[in-house]
Structures are given as C-alpha cells and as structure tokens.
Image (cartoon, rainbow, N blue to C red):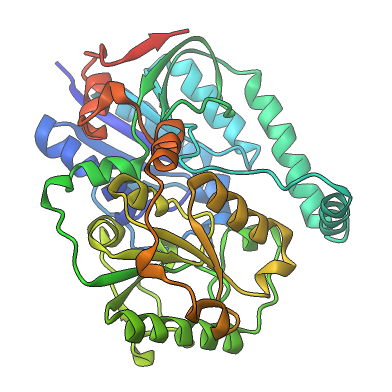
Length: 408
C-alpha cells in the first residue's frame, strides 16, 4: 500500500513561517503523513519571489526552474505515493494554465484555499477615486500589462474543469475566485492565524506588553513593489515619528513594546527601525501567535495585515496607526479606515504627538459583537469550534471527510 502524502504546490518561496502557519509539522507527526513542497516560484512568479523573502523550510522542499523538470518529479511522486494535492498556484503567470492542466489530468484529490482570511475592501468609488485609479494605471505601462495578464490568465484557467475540488472556506464569506470543477466540496476551515491561536489558547495569560505589528514597507519591498508601485515616503522622518510614538507608549503606559516584523523580512534589519533604537523585536516563527493574545493592546501600521485575526480571536484591543504621508495614497489610507470600521477598531494619526497624547489606549475596550461578526464572516465557523486546521486537513487526506462539509 502506498504511503499517503500531501503535495503542496506553491507559487512563492515556501518558508518556515509558512510551514508553521499551515500546521504541516502537526500533520506529519500526529498522522504519519509525508508533506512535500514544490516551489514553482521560478516558473510562475519570479518578480513576486523577490518580494516574498524568509528562511526556507528545506525538509522535503524542492524548487523547479522549468515545467518539464517539475512534471517529471510530479509523475514520480504520483507513482510512489497516494497523493493529495494542495494547489496554491497563483493566477499571475501563463505557466499556471499548464500546471493546472496537468493537475487536472492526474485526477488526484485537489485542495484549494481561496478565502482571503481578511477583509479586502474596494476603494470607495467616486470621481476622486476614479481619477486616482486611472492616473496610477495609465501612467505606468507595467500596471496595464499586469492587470490585463491577470484577467486573461484567470479566464484561461477557468476553461480547465477539474473533476473534484475540496474548497477550504474560512467563515461565511464566499465571494472569491476559485478554479472550476464538476464537483465541489466546501469544507469549513479556520483562517490560518485563527487555528494557530486555537493551538495555544489554553496557555494565555495577559502580560504588561504591547505588540507593534510592523509592515514590510516603506523600507523593505512590499506587495506593491512587484507591480512597480512605490510609496515615496521620507524614510528618516517616518521612522523618527514611529520611534517617538512607541517611546511615548512605553513611557506613558509603563509597558514593553515588542515589535513583530513582517514575515517576509523577519530576520532582516531596517537601519531606521531596529534594536539600536531601543526597540525589542521578536523574530521567531510564531511571534504573532504567542505575543498578540497576551498583550494589553496591539498597534499596527500595516492596515491589511492578517495579524488582526489574533486580536479578534483573543479579544485584544487593536489600533490602526497611520501618518499624513499614508493619506496621500488612497488605497493604503482607504484600507486603514475601512478595516477599522469593519472590525470596530480605532485609528490614530501619529504624525504629530498631539494626535495621540490625549488618546487613552488603555481605556478602549473591544466591541465583542463586531469582533464576533467579523470572526464568523472571515475567520471561522461554529461548526468546527475547537477543531484545529491540521485535523481538518487530515480528514481530507485520509479520505475520512465527513467534518462539516457540503457538496455543491
């Protein structure tokens, strides 16, 4: 009898943080399953791979530079193992069509995870937003090419009809783009951060700390860099404002601020914002999981970070901070305001000390009703309460799927 194995196919560099978030270690150790990673970033998204940094998880990790090499390995694994495919192939490149075609031809069980796991609000549509949008696009030829290619690749992928897809759905939100298939099995599944929280929930005890969730930009390349968009921040001024703000928080509330760097550059050093500025950084793989739930409150500049999921899961107050420079970018600023509204969290402009010195961070309480509404729309379901993601994944791979699923 063939050994059961999960083949995770990634469009991006697969890091140790990714392995932790997907709970693959638990799948391997508790169910004796083999987890194999196929990194197709050189085939599908070289431009994106330069942005998605992080320490590689090397165990059963294979990176391919051509479709022919990947296909040879894929066929070998199909002969050797009883495979289930976790298809995380992006829609950015034309090679994704070829990869999906071969996956479809294999007739193997295919798992996809299309849920955004965070609210992704559109820019409010008005004359100002239209001018902003089209000015950005048509003054940057690469953006025209980039978005045109996404639409075309998405359409061509939609022509491939899989036999059966297992769709991992987080929350009740279902307005996502997904591959087409003759049969779809919707499986209730936690957002990855929420499931990570469930695994440590029993050991939570609040401490005298505050978490600051850092973003990749403006110093490091971020998601926007891959499509040629840059935010022209004055780095020195921005990080001076940020350091002054965090110094105030520590002094005013007599707490220790712990910075959690973005996963893309967790082990890289920003010369404007590092330990030499009096900051304490937690650069561990599970930093957000272990630090946010035990914090007095959480501060974030990265408005679209899924780190808010830990705050919502643990009912920890969360604050979106921004600067006057961010207000110049409608997308960034809009995300900040709309996510705050959607989650019931507060926003604070930290450009001037007068804006935050009068703000009572320690007195703000979470709105549990809003947190719960968000949780059940984007993060989880009551049907899988207390069941971690690795157990749900195992039920699919071991072909014992009867856990809160529906066929459509």
